[in-house]
Image (cartoon, rainbow, N blue to C red; front, side, top):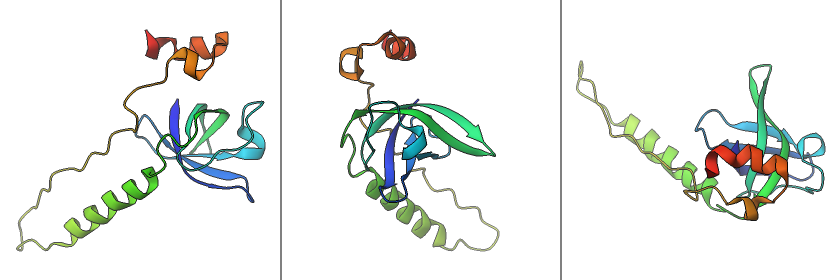
Length: 134
């Protein structure tokens, strides 16, 4: 799975990731979930990771940074979309009418997955990304 870091805290070692599948956010602990050789993650970093569910919470493990500062303004962009959505919902409709507003879709940043050379050339990365790169 690929994702972009929305929030991280170096003191607590925690981070929140927006995933390419547009599902629920994933959480990680930098002390336990980073792949060997990866020091830390920061907001905007593009990651590759294994996704699993633990007690109904999506978690990331074996996390590798593919590109630092890939989408540094993503958290602000998502917050802006949420503010517009909330303002639209507050608009009152006459009693008994259903108001359908157009959806705001924010695409996964970058539009494409880095090629195998950019992401690293070991066999495991190539197998993991093979379907995407084919």
